[in-house]
Image (cartoon, rainbow, N blue to C red):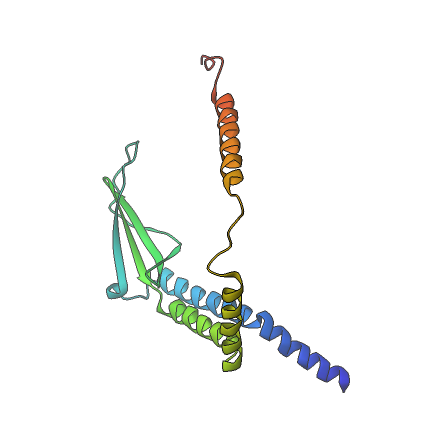
Length: 181
């Protein structure tokens, strides 16, 4: 019976330490797989997509493509999560079609909220003691800590940067031209 209770308490403790992160990752992976399956089967609405036009200056010529190619990837912009659906390169512009992932955004917000609640102690006595200890430290040390003589810091920095610049210039000098092909 004691072993069972200790295992139960250890499990609760382990979940409190990092189990919610593992649960979040598992939910995130399943949501990602469901969205990828919808994208692959083209079961998404065109109204939910966003088309990005990225100007590119390529040093080589490419053949213009009128058809989109399927791509994988994700990015975050202003707190929203987007999944890449397809892209095409036409002349000097890359057209990327993305879909907003509402499910992952909801998961991230729920995870942040849970982590905030888990870390929040909620006691006012600790907040008051923290401010009073800060006030005591401020009264004891004053507005700042003054070094007796800070000229040694400047001279040490000048010495360090002067010597490192000499070493860099020694490494940059090339005594011979590159070999002929």
